[in-house]
Length: 389
Image 1 (cartoon, rainbow, N blue to C red):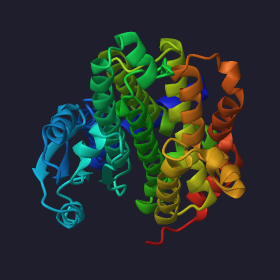
Image 2: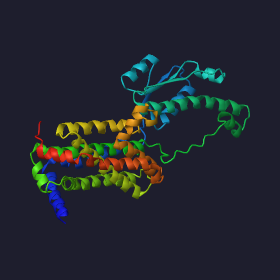
Image 3: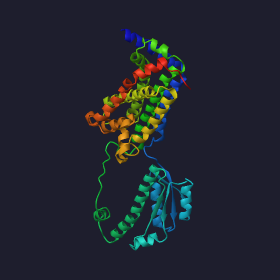
Image 4: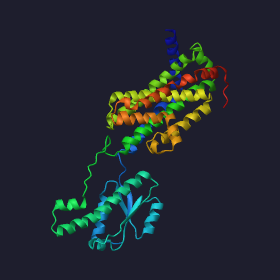
């Protein structure tokens, strides 16, 4: 009962600090909520649409104009300009006015009708990876459809049936099944990594900051005295209010994206709750560990910032970890976001049982336990260290 009373008194003290220090309100509530709505709204359509493309049509025939109209009719492409030469279109790409252009040389229709295999070129910028890949797909489809349309008309004139024409133009029919994300929604797989990663960044920083300010404002000894110098009780009382706030933010985010926005989540509500709990506790564990490793407000927050920013690259969502060099593959295990992302993919996104991701679950549990390695150093810092700006 004595320990519970001490934890309760420290929690009241911490709630008073959270209420009077506006940094906590902004970093724990305002910024995470704004970030959630920002990321989910910026990719609200799932895929980028109406991306600007140009046309260099030196053929200027009914067939070439038909290709232009078809390209403009695609959801992701919008023809915004016609250029007299390839050089002009290239300069438009360099000025970032268009992402790519389709080049139809003179005599294209004539060669098509004579079955002399004309060359239609398309150029696209890969500076923006998503835009380049999607526009390449559209322009490649248009180039294929152009020759198919002429072939279809020729075969119909020769008396072939529609079934024979289809078998000739598309001898192998593709039956495509995109598991878990059939809409190819960028929102469904980018937001679910970027937002949790950013929330973990805030948790890292706030955890280290809350310990560092005890030294900065010379309140550490008073804080420990409320727990009779028991550092475990002091840490529990200090971080329980923060844990509850972070859980409210994380569960609110999960409800918003998985139930309001209907993001795919085959793993169910129970797995989401477990993953959110592990995410918060593992991030707090790392933040406390970073401060214990280097009991300095400035240095511990620098470590947390560096580790959180590197996490976005090492999580494996933008570039697969299996494609990285061997040392980087080993290093990826040291980032909590990597394990969160793997559990999300395996157990939430694809709905596999937790046993399939047991190692990543154990890794997050290890991050939760990291503070036990440095509790004595934290206690010593609070009792003896002098704050140095």
